[in-house]
Image (cartoon, rainbow, N blue to C red; front, side):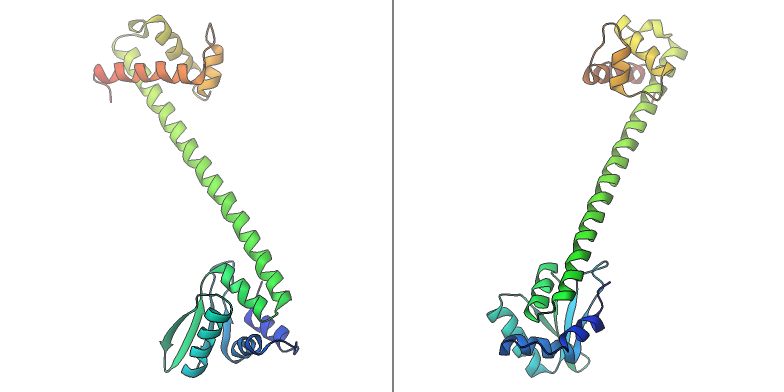
Length: 204
């Protein structure tokens, strides 16, 4: 985990650098804090107004960054919330070890977020599929109880009976059991017709 005191320890090793880079480094040593990048991206320097203004000028004009400045309890805070720009500040200060830790954490966070996004997407799709299947089964049972499945046309009755018999099968798997087999869209089309018939008969 990247911590502010680890960065300070690295910066205090006294690497030679240009005046602007040295000033950024001295500002961090004087009042720099970085948040845990696993949670959020936030780097700030707490300084007097003169140093804060100079830091903003150097970071923006010399290095092309976009720092913000606010007043806080009689002092001034220069902060950055973009991950790429925080990485740039670590580069400016030549905090190379800390930069590697920061970038490694960013990669891990990105992968973790992508995995979570895919899991959430798959879960939503699964819930949608299960909900649709339950609705289809309810419609078929309603028709069976009120009119009998023979009320349906032969192709619809065939799908209806397979849906009741194999509640856990996917539409593709149901289609493969038909004679002749049909694709997922064909099965879905027939089940929609069945649900519409049940609705017209007074089913929910």
